[in-house]
Length: 127
Image (cartoon, rainbow, N blue to C red):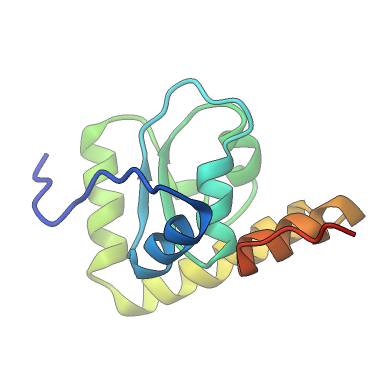
């Protein structure tokens, strides 16, 4: 796989993480063993499309949505999904909107409001 132009990041704090997410085009999430799957959710909430391997719990978030074709089985399907998104402005825009809407819809309970504010603002409300 050609990784030209890709960066592996290690942000030092939440503000840097949010800045990096906002500057990114997409997240290719390669973890095969994930707890909650927070990195993809953080990115999706900011409107960043996510291509990921079919792993639990991410399959629960993506299945039965228009984003299910961003769940990939192998390197070939990952490269195809990434290329499709990055080289089609209309598709990119659609996936961005669907990603954000999916996460906002999944976390519609009260505790999610604080999570959403945190991701959008980079701070937690101490009250």
